[in-house]
Image (cartoon, rainbow, N blue to C red; front, side, top):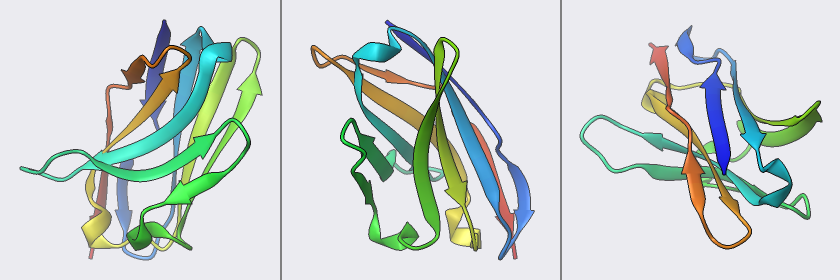
Length: 118
């Protein structure tokens, strides 16, 4: 089992930057896919970025060149980051980190609000 705790959301002006963090604990060695999703009000959760075990990354077109997903090991945890630059008002959403582990189970964090003012 994996526990995910996000942090780093907040209010920022358009053009600004934020870095979201997601601390993964528990069976972190079994994680083979790390992702960030976001959910706009009244909409379903949508994919933003992904990182696999080989270090390959993937982004939705709307964030390419502005967002970067990465991860580092920190003691018994794995920290998954989403660096967000040149933020726009239409990036305003609740951001969730998610992982998939060996065996196919998936886990979500609790979400963190990002608000970009114009």
